[in-house]
Length: 137
Image (tube, rainbow, N blue to C red; front, top):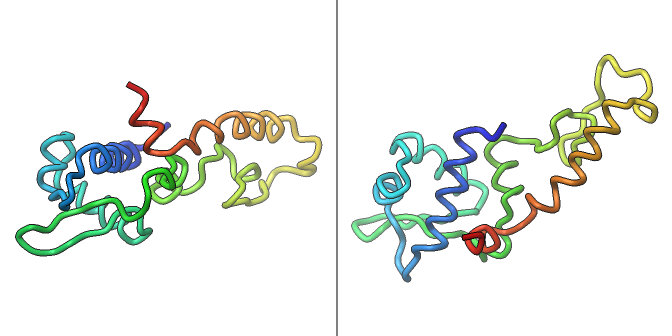
């Protein structure tokens, strides 16, 4: 299940993409317009900034804007930044692989094969960019 933090992060990036008009947008405005609790949003923005998905400008005219080209910000990347692995079990994760303690043979494990197939079907969709998401009206 998509966490609330990740959903809010995606909503935030989408809002920044669709509403940027040459100057940063304050967290307060994003919070109000997207109905995201302000303190929760501040933590999400801090994490997105750490990973250079957003950038910030301080001061009276400060706020947030995208830190990179929106075509280069995938939904999968946002999900990984906020929640970690996308794969539902660790032995099929591409970036956070861990072997399963109880598994004796990954090659013949039917559960692993099933969830690897699911990941392979899901990833191309999640690798779509914020621009692609914005166009899904």
